[in-house]
Length: 196
Image (cartoon, rainbow, N blue to C red; front, side):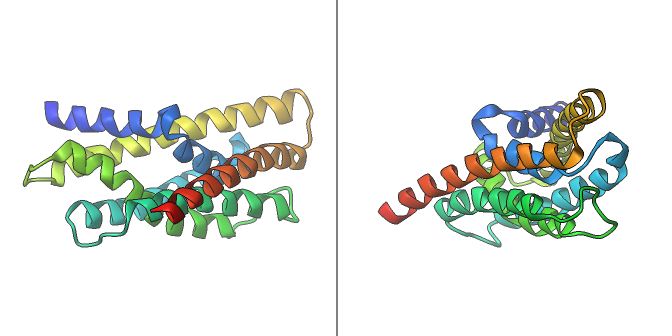
């Protein structure tokens, strides 16, 4: 059980770590259009993201899939600014039943999973039985995502419900800030990718 707890802790600590801000930004971009009362929709989003990154994390850690880590590090901020840009250009303030964010969560989760894999591979080393650590790490990532989602939704609730900022204005503010940061990250990583 100690090993399980250790990988669980590493999973959630990895996703909430400010040094890995790209994961926090992606989850925040996914949640930017939601308020606390939309928590069920957000739970579906987070689950779609978890499924996506779990698939590629498992495939990458077991060396079934291998993509250059430099390319993945560039693609991760691209996923963030596409998600944020989608929020900015939305016509409705209130999210509909089926929308693009569900696709973004699942598909872009595949890319983020490959980003997590390098970190997890370094932790696993030459270990042969990876099922338990992989499960624990993924559950930890899910827990970390729920912490981020809770923070974003609580902040949105305070800003929209207490200060009476319009829901659309909150979305524009948060999504624009995330878009700008992600665009700068992508540009910087693109330069690094071209140098190598």
